[in-house]
Amino acid sequence: MAETDKLLLAFYGDDFTGSTDALEFMTRAGARTVLFLKPPSAEDLEKFGKLDALGIAGLTRSMEPAKMKETLEEAFQKISELNPRYVHYKVCSTFDSSPEIGNIGVAMECGLKHFKNDFIPVLVAAPNLGRYMAFGNLFAQMGIGSKGEIFRLDKHPSMAQHPVTPSKEGDLRDHLALQSPLKSGLVDLLDLKLPFEEIQEKLRKLIDDHQVIFFDGVYEEQMKIIGRILDESADQDKPLFSVGSSGIGKALGDHWQEEKILTETLEWKELEEVKPLLVLSGSVSPVTASQIEFALEHGFREVEIAPEFLYEQEPDVSVYSDKILGLLNEGNSVILHTSKGPEDPRLKKTRAITEELGWDSQRSRMELPRYFGGFLGKIIRQVLTGKSLQRLVIAGGDTSSYAARELGINAVEMIAPLVKGAPLCRAYAENSPVDGMEINLKGGQVGAPSYFVELQNGRLNDN
Image 1: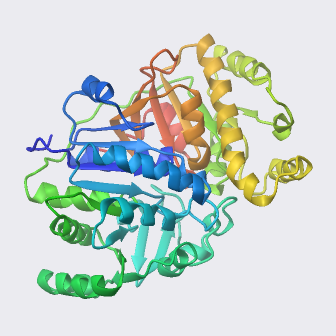
Image 2 (image 1 turned 60 degrees about the vertical axis):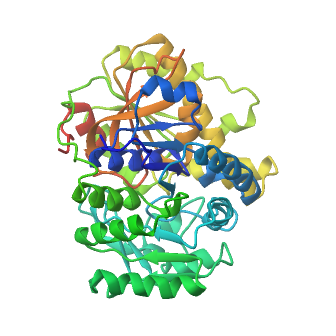
């Protein structure tokens, strides 16, 4: 718990799984943090007592620019009323975005307009997650928490083929230039080796003609340096608005621990074996596909969502919920999924259906996460009405936000680390069967092939 009454940081996540990633790194750093699914009211905050930080899990990663702007203007106003020292617009550590969907440039423009800072610091690097930035280029490991190969973003087997926001540029300055006219500069790896005063001088010069400043980051020790830069860039009279991955929380947290503002959390709930385990996956990542295959080889059962439900105004969830309940009642752990990787024939069928419905590519990219996430959530809510379970896993960044809302989740709080970037949380969901359950939300890129099996067996606790 921080030794200050002021809210240290408020973050707004562009999806749910990414928001739990930010929740984890603030909690690990020693800040009591709760993640809400909408801006909290005074009554909401009163329920949780003193908080050091809070997050809001948004949906902007799957929104078009006009809707993003409307949503963020309202959210940033409500965050301002909380008077935090820092405001962080949390994006995926692979900078998932495009001019048409999840436009990060739009978020930056809204942040500049609302918070009126001299510049926006942008830190996407998160070495502890296998995300590295060198001379403006982002590199990502295949599978967070694994020992996968590292690729530049535009060469990454998963991100270069992402169904909604495929990565076409490795240099994030070029990637951002496709989304916004804001000028971006860079504090690079060589700059970070300079004495601190010289780094600050370089930053001051960049701010003269750049509104956005990216920071490289390859090594853990550089995060503390960047945290100090962020901390000393803050104005006492207004919050500092930043954009980036959970590297922002990691950098600030490392610095605040050194300054004795926070004390690192070292003791956690022991992770127990839980069987049966229920997994719902809206991910098309090859990483998640390998986890599904591994789980099936080790006793899990699967239920596949057929995309034909898109034709129906009110699709029947009982077809799936009854099957899942039958498998659970036999003692089986179950995975409900929409895809097993980018080669799954259901993806081709989904494209054919959306064309038949008259959806263009932009509408498909925007609507499909909502349709699939909402349908997954309805099925699982029906299942949980018929059977109580201890632990639930939701995989897939684009669909998770919609599934969580359909399940009635209002907020989550971290209770134990698993793989970095995907903590075990407790769900707060008034009048919903998911209330009080252990919930794990993982992005498509998170985890080794054994992820679901180890989460069932209680072997992932990463102290």
